[in-house]
Length: 273
Image (cartoon, rainbow, N blue to C red; front, side, top):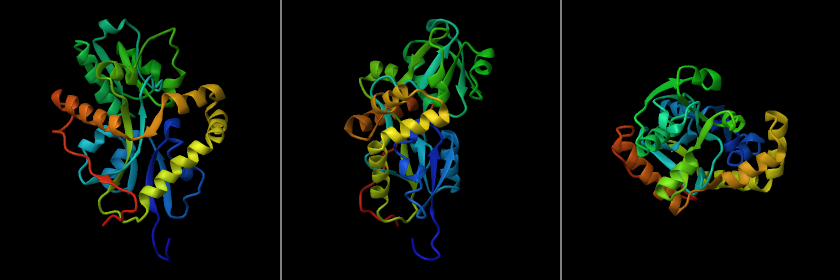
């Protein structure tokens, strides 16, 4: 970074599922070029929209709500089976759900759960709630719960739907929860390479990520390793792009998302103007 140049501000989701993608930022190996800020998913989107950050790992639904974004090609947070950290947790049988709490940390999963319940023919109302399970269920039959808190849900006590698994059953596609998005005016040559190398570093050092998750979050090593390497995947390929298109289409059909528009991608070795 040249003298007088400001670091590019990067909004990073403060959940374990982002750690492999963001490992170079978490460990300081992209300093001083990038300045990371760790936020919950909905706030990353808000900060990107307002210009408080230049690049953000945003909920995929926000690609349809925030104008003038480019997506870093090839990278995402997705799951092609059970994700285990994006759940509908219910104190009643699923078919009896009539009132649902929506985790205020979420944007994409809040749309997804409404799509999935509508597909099951369940006519429910939806209400924003702060992400604390007991409080979320106090006035609701069920609640959306995402991120690290969802990993700790007692599945013997509650009925649980894994939303990525439900989407796979409905569409035959993986589900894309988040992508790296860049404000159009940001100028950063080699940006795709920097973010791609961060993921490669995270995958190479997955055991270090597992150890940190055990120390900081108290999660068992085998469970964390399985979550990061089997339940999640980080490559944005053809199936993932098809899934995004289907998600945008279904969300719009229910009045939850704007008219779908095409995603504009930032390709490798491209300087943003």
